[in-house]
Amino acid sequence: MRCPRCGNENRDGALRCEACGFPLPEPAPERANRSALYSRRAASSRRRRGGVVFLVILVTVLGLALIGVCGLLLGRSLGWFDAKVVPPLPEYSAAPTATPAAPTAEPDPTPDLTVVPEATPTAEPATLAGSEVWSVLYEGFIGQGRYLEGDEPKFAENGTPEIGFVLADMDGNGTPELIARSATETVGECAVFVFTCEGESLRYLGEAGRGDPERFTFADPVYPGLFATQSVDGKFTTYYYRLTGAGVAEEAVSLDDYSVELAEDAEIETEQLTSDETLFLLVEGSAPTDRNYLTYYTPAEIRSMGWSGFVTLCGGDE
Image (cartoon, rainbow, N blue to C red; front, side, top):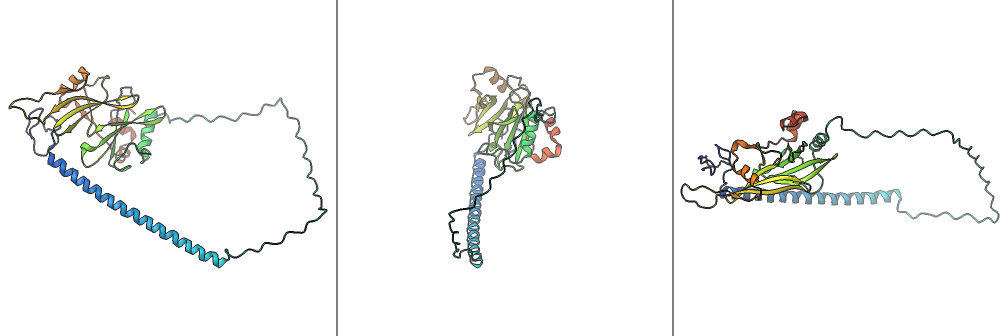
């Protein structure tokens, strides 16, 4: 397949240009085959889960019935269900014996108001062992193996090695965000999740698109976020993901439409989608060498290299 950006001829089935790294349009039959395979696997998985649930319910009901029968037989053998004989009440006496009054307690001595009681020492506030808050939070978050409770974010297989992590400062404030990606059969379907540190707690900000986001080496502090290119039916749209007070914001930057037929030697014209002229020119004028794709590491790999090694590998300073 010929690369639409540099014109290099690539082998069939290549996902990126072997010369410049630009994402290549994916043939529709392959997408359809993978989609059908994924649907068959999902249906098979649902049938297996349904059978397991039915078996668990059946075993539970039979177990409860068996326990009830055994309890009934045991109760009868021990006489638990026999009629109880109530003893007669004692006869009423007109002159009951008086109960002696309890001795009066000695009054407490007058307190000495000149003595100040010793104050209870106040517990020292918890510290984070001399490390930065974000580092401790992120390390514990990855190490606990459960990630978040509730519905968001939806990892493909929560707690499995298929989940990868990387650090990236998406707002240029010096504190990196924790980026997580849930792997599926097709990289283009992987959701990218963003977490940050607020105070002494972890906050989920939302998704930064799908697939393989990247940082541009030319990005100055004005554009510290992530970039990602999504393709649908031969139309390649580049998005910029930045952080706001509400979470992750998505902004469409440019569009390259390869679905139209062009005259011989004609070139695709990139359409500007953003109102930010500087952002558009930076993306449009970037070369493959200007791009830095994120590399994700599984929890097992992070444990193997050590937390300090992971932070350093992501460009941080532990």
